[in-house]
Image (tube, rainbow over all chains, first blue to last red; front, side, top):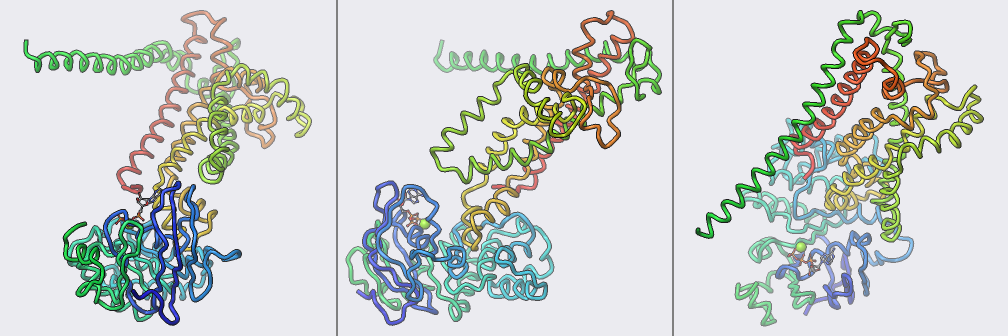
Length: 256
Length: 298
Ligand SMILES: Nc1ncnc2c1ncn2[C@@H]1O[C@H](COP(=O)(O)OP(=O)(O)OP(=O)(O)O)[C@@H](O)[C@H]1O
Ligand SMILES: [Mg+2]
């Protein structure tokens, strides 16, 4: 099984994790290459979301959890003492399963992160709005109503707005947790299309909402089953020639 | 008799009971309001408007100017809210967002106990401790001032304000916090720029409920404000005695001749108070309504 590559963007080593004493990840080790789309897929409750949230330390505020192992970004342990957590989260953006525009206009939503980070320069902010919305394939649809309420957008547009919001911070890594779970096929197609564009500049980890989506967008894919990393292969081989029986059963739709 | 019709009967009885209870609650409020109108409206005919909305309240000389009383009530209510709002929101934020679990378990019941302190006890506390303090610190001629009343009122409004604001913070979905944190917000930025603004309408409701409680408060206010019916127009009015609508009604109702102009005037004050509270509550309700219509929070 491929777990180690040269110069990975993210390296996950022997990570185990428990909520209130209940193990949800067991000794997960894998490397995530830069400028590619890596998919974590598997049945519900397997720990995929948890693994994503460990990378940007979003689970820090959850009580009663236990973690062992190491996660590093560009070789730096993200859980080391003295790590600037807000800065880490600006480098590792995240988009959640449910699109959640913050109260306010489309423009305000895109600029939330940069403003929190202290960006005040007007022309710079304007530039960020245009660039982020373009990258998220939303610009053409909203260019005329940037100052309209974000909540008036359709579900698919809201999800792309959330992607734009993450991109506004120019992260290095983008974590996408089922970004198209609530979307119609056309919006899903648009989001997937923008991924192809984005991976040239970003390292992307996606939890797809179906095996089919994983097969469509992933450059590499890892199968996670109830807290265990079963199989991780480069390219799309995992979908055509899985090595593990359990992976095969899952991708051929025999369970899950 | 079939089982179905049995439960149909039970349902009918329960439904009727609930309906009667509901309507009678509304009915009683209406009755109170009608009574208030019957006793108070004559004042608006017996006293010329120039007098009724004048600046001097001396019933013995047939002067029924309600303006100093209305302004007195508003002055201490608004001052109380200005004091209580930042304290209450900060406390709610601390209890809900910052305090560790064990501290929250201790603080919450303590705050609820505060709400249960009888107002006469607070008035006593105000007279013996707060008033001398105000006199010394602010150099007022007497400690029984509008400011003393506002402090006591702020204290009384706090428990309601805190628990309603806390519920509002609690109702902000976990995902809002996650979204903010994921964009690199610090814990403070998350609280002040995302969670509190998202809970804004709930906090407005908390303030209005606190105001409604404060403006109707009588006993404690009567004990600590000095009860001089003067116009609070100068800058130092806050540190001078004042008289509220509630204190006037409570103090004078006992010795007034039923049916006299003075009697009607006191009920007239009651109507003004009722209308003010009604407007405040209506604003609170419409704040809630607007939030729902905008679909701001999910
Ligand atoms: N905050 C939490 N507190 C306690 N247990 C949790 C928490 N979050 C997740 N879990 C548990 O951890 C396990 C893994 O959850 P996780 O959300 O990571 O799975 P997932 O693979 O993302 O599932 P899905 O495909 O349904 O999104 C589940 O059993 C879940 O109940
Ligand atoms: Mg998940």
